[in-house]
Image 1 (spheres, rainbow, N blue to C red):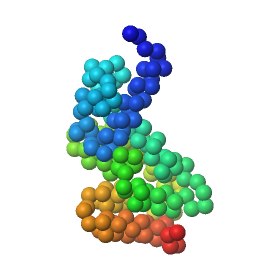
Image 2: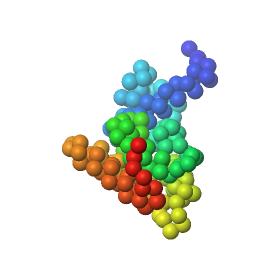
Image 3: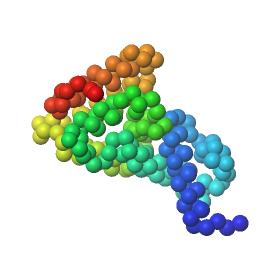
Length: 188
């Protein structure tokens, strides 16, 4: 039975969304194509009607993750204190609590580097975030430091068992970054 192009596009989108969720939660290597397709009640062979390889899916899933992150930390840093809001949302307990819906960088960056196949999508997303941060930080400030500190703090806060230590990693990094950008007012 032939399916419409719309059905094929919807199925592809379902695969991308589930892969994005699983890659952030479990990692790329731990997410096999057969397991992914089975979770969607699709056949392993059907995967290749949508993607030429798992690497293609990884790139699509990374794009999807970047789009989803925009809902938590908007692409266009607007409002009265855009960078402050970005930092507070990123380094929040809510963001920490749900890796499957959060930023992809703390979850799979090390894995992409370790497997020797970084993605150009990662370059695009990191560059975009650095540009956004640079637009809202003094010239002598380092956007790479801000982004790296946020990603690192979120990663470490998710990797420890002690909830106080986890909170400390988020809280102290957030406070330091807010001091760095000159936004030292207490949290609301």
